[in-house]
Image (cartoon, rainbow, N blue to C red; front, side, top):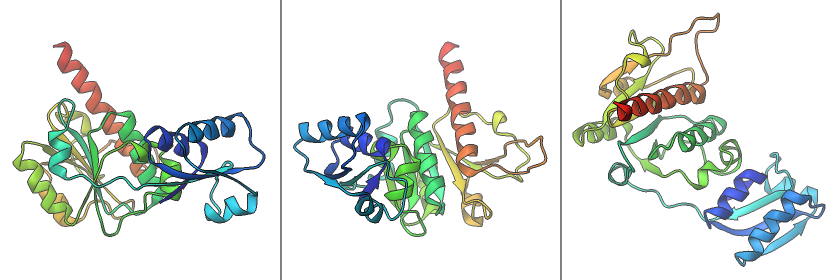
Length: 241
């Protein structure tokens, strides 16, 4: 797997997943720091011209560095639940194929301390390149469970006591009225199409984010962030009680 950009490469180095690095011959302080981190781990570093970096990043904003990394092994949904640090908080992606949205959701999931992300192995964005860049390096840290059938996974989550909450713009219930202090799997669908019918039907509850302006929808990564941090707020209040 190949990633590019300063933050994604730094985080992959911290996660000990980098196997090789190409870096601009015109290194600044940040790139020099990356080279030192790589050398300390015994990772081969190649000085490369700009056209080579552009080719290996497929025209992406590489910021002078491209890295080859080992792909993290997929974990099971059961492992995500069992390995939760506290009350499980999981994000389920229903056919989100835009790599920028996937990367942004991974970044938010990491910031919110989620226990992991579940996504379908088919019709899913690659986790290198643009997704890794949009995640600001979170792709190196967030546990990801690749599954075949999202609807079936929701049934399994409910069976182990995880509350499944689907985000849907047409849902009459507001997300602030949902008890997110419980073990929760937040289910989000692709922009434009939203959650598929079978996935909607498997959710314990559907919730919406009330819109008060002229635009009637939010980017899926923004919507996920709003609800994840509402979950953190509710959980903090419950601990205080």
